[in-house]
Image (tube, rainbow over all chains, first blue to last red; front, side, top):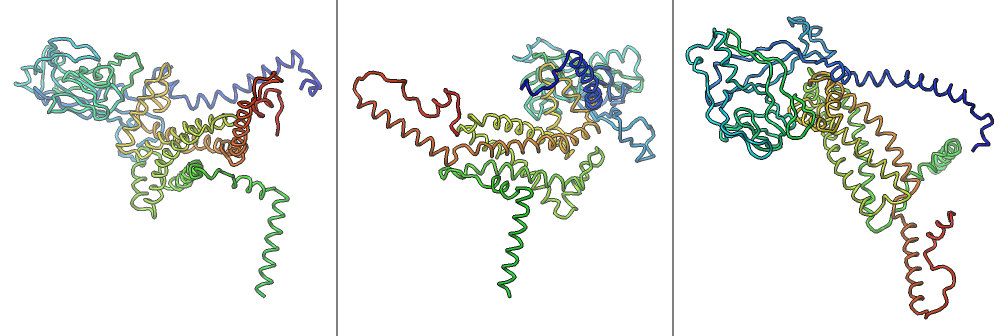
Length: 235
Length: 275
């Protein structure tokens, strides 16, 4: 092979090729790669989110019964680049509200944990859920201390299963949350009881009851990984 | 009269074939690509690869047809599929073929791989064709995964959510995989667009040349267990048995030369090809 090369490459030729190659290679590869990976750059590097960060109304907490959880569907506004609804439909009030992410929220009253269970082997032993007494008298116009009491007793849970994100629902017969996909089980507090989920249900970390007696949440969860240290993701 | 026309037509077509053959060599190429000797025994098993090729061709053809009506936006995806199924002429047939041949494709690939594996068809000199085949399998799985979301119904939607969350459990890059597929951090219009782009452009564009490479390598080495290879090996086996028979009768003699190890093995060791 060597004799085919009439002019051997000199050191400066080699360096020239290397430098030019690096420049041309960068020009050719960086734009398309960054173009395709821009969601990763936006979300993981810059920490931005497509989901609106504002408060979203859930519903009146007085509607949550004592023994059973109840669910509300909320719509978080999401902004993903294209497809502005305002262009197609001029009647949309908020031009920023392009699309919504519909999530279900399970609300229930906390049941006191009598004995802490261990993730992966057995669930918590719990008592009866405690509904705040104040809700029997009024459903709105709570004072500061009453709101605090309500929030300390309220479970605000995402319906996204901690295993693979299927929507869980309350099974009245078993008195547990049941995931339809792989049979994950959670108690009324969202604690792990059985099945493949590595942890309990995701809780909304930013939730508040206002004077009108309604609950408001932000799209934020406690996303600590569970038994196995994997990157959790909430739909 | 009719006889003359027949002769003239046959001469004209013969001329056309010869002309094309001389310019492009297409006739020998077609002969080379279409005809392949396979052993009589288990001949039907050799159709599994062709079955895969047939179903994947159906995927390409019906997929192109579906694109005439399908709209990849969150507002219209489900409605456009519904239109294909209920209003478009033969829509049920076209989408049905796309759906069912996708299912059969996976089954055929499994059977084809099993046939190659259990017959030892992946062995030298066909290792690279096995590697190309496995890449093709992964691409087809990617196509099956991305195609499911495009229906934008509850079934496809939740299956894709589960699939993406399975991706989130992959070591080190879990979060990135999910955000790449979602096109952000929520399921929305970007997700559907990405899956559409991957399903309709990226993976088919990657799969087509690899199918070509798979077929080229197949024709280069022939189907394993082809008539000649089979008889060749059988002849070698008989030869070896004959030599063993001789050895049994030969009493203790002086060892002259090296022991017989088979023609092919020796040729390999001395570093030259027989063919």
